[in-house]
Length: 333
Figure 1 (cartoon, one colour):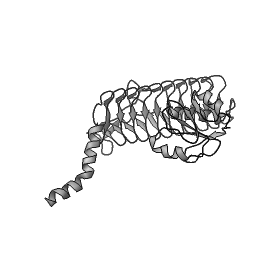
Figure 2: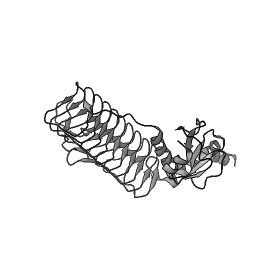
Figure 3: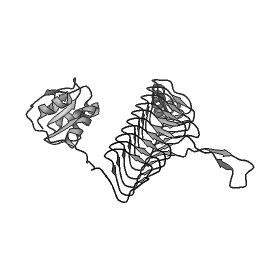
Figure 4: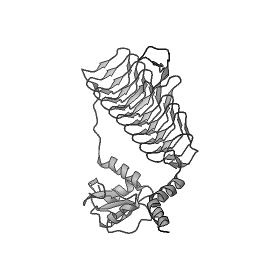
């Protein structure tokens, strides 16, 4: 692909030789001639000056460099779109593998690809153009929209509802029982915890992705809901009866306790923990490994455990790092 054509496809302003041939994309550390790469973090500016890439996606005000540049407001998003131009995903032919078990009462939309050893239960509704890979299990009465993509060993439990364009990565579980037990002090030894039925479904709205080995628990009553466009990273847990707002990012190993409310466009960074019944306001950011014991207002950035204002946390951390020096100074006096 000519660099000029790539620039036009991405809506970028080209500085450099538009006749250069672009054959693929690569990270800036490994890019070679023929590759396009990107810089969206200032720490990689020095690498951009010496890169062997034929072109670099950068912000409009980025400094001039030897390589051609494609200048655009969001280089990272443009890089993602460039990947789509050069990397064509596997297209799975419609058909149902002979080892798959599809209940006669299930309703399957047009052009499904249903792989080996898939099990689709009674009264399931599955929309058009689904791709369901090997060993996926869909329990009875689940309702799933169009263009569903489920990778091997994903599970959708009974009565759960999924919208259009939902992606489940390997081992994702939607609608497993919530962690609900009532203590029975009079029960015989070894039976002190009485299991509470989890009667409400998990609901995933349109364009939700749940990545590998994450769990969205069903609700005791009511529902657990993941809003449109939300993305759940690997090994995350969304507790029963919780609400995760639209376009929110839940990063790896985050734990959201039951009955929590997470607003729209929130970022929960890796290993953050949210207390049960907590409310995280729209647009808030909880930084990595933070423990949130209560509510967080909209737009706030919090850090630490217990989490508090990020700026104050940074100051406190800097002071703590200087503590040995300060103690030494005081002792010298």
